[in-house]
Image (cartoon, rainbow, N blue to C red):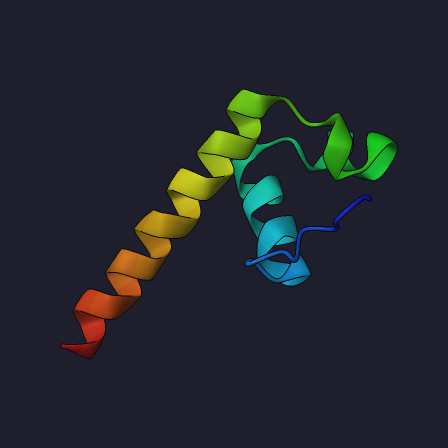
Length: 59
């Protein structure tokens, strides 16, 4: 039985991060499954950095 993972990041955030990191063209051509594991990891790192920065501004 196949389970679908629910994305934690919104689609808009993923698109913005992909554009920022320079692999959005791959996403457009091949979908999210076409990106390299390294790019996905960099996307997560960048999302964490943004979240930490936002949290520090709230304090």
